[in-house]
Amino acid sequence: MHSNSKEKKLIINWLECDLCGKSNIEVTTTYGNPELLYAEDKCQCLDCGADGVIECDDGIAWANWYEEQSND
Figure 1: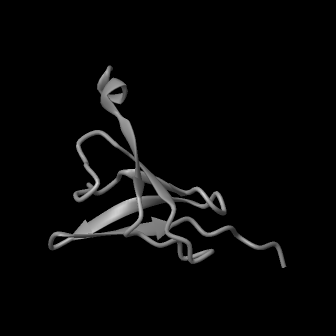
Figure 2: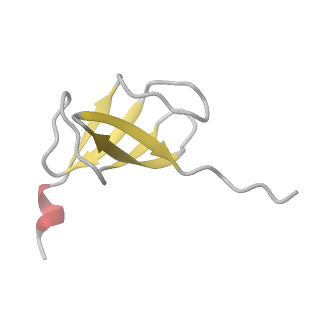
Figure 3: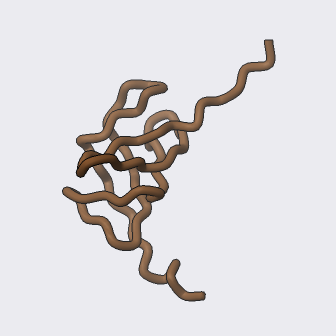
């Protein structure tokens, strides 16, 4: 399987990290570009290290962040 060979990393400044509020987001995508992302693209905040995934609905994309579970 060589689909990963076409993956590229983009810095997207129109997304925001829900955990730290910064907009320095790296998205790993096969087909996307700086203006168009795809559902299931992986994303990471370069400021706090949070990981997430891109979700899309009706032409709008956003980051769904994996929040750390606290052990209270």
